[in-house]
Image 1 (cartoon, rainbow, N blue to C red):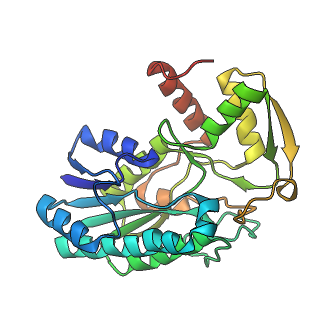
Image 2 (cartoon, one colour):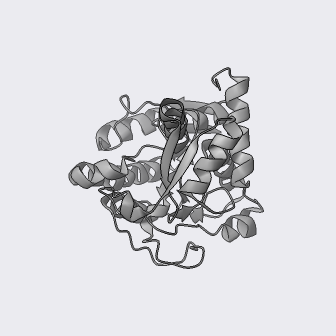
Image 3 (cartoon, rainbow, N blue to C red):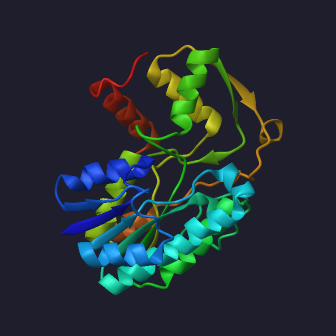
Length: 285
């Protein structure tokens, strides 16, 4: 099986490339090498590579930045997704597209299912939802909604907490936003599982278990062995340009029922992340 990977230099793209590169033929393109909004370039590369699967990890994920760069957000997250879907269709490849919990408004009191009606409250969420709609026009596609993603590459919440902890010895983190912390390692495993056992459609692809950002931060410092004071904040005390979902717990029942996959608990995934950093000599208490 040959897999074409977009944004292979991104937080998720690096781990996707490493994982599938062990067992498959991989054609991996950095974002500067393959602009997913450049339809002619995308079609040319798909025609040249003739992949069986395309994994699109490219996106504009700066949630607050999307609020001020609305046109760019829609160009990448909506139009780029459409380009990838059309290119996959032209080449007969299966498409894996990564989406987000931000397609929901966070007002629910129970875990969101794939069939629940999206209602995004930010430019990022709206542009990603429009991207989903573009991808759904192609029947041989998988849409994986993930959340609170972190990994050893790129910028993320775990790295931010570690930096603030080292620099300041304390961090203020909100207690009233709940979700599913998810490692890139776990998301890659879910991608692999869906490709092997899944039916086409939308899947919620996060670690199991739900917590607040504040609880997540405390667990990060505990596992890192860092003595850091975590101050409790509310969303109102920590305003951001983009509205965050207050509750974005994603239900993974479909992932288990269709693919037989039980998502890893977020505590275990975080431990795996720190164990990896220690093994790779990238971690210094």
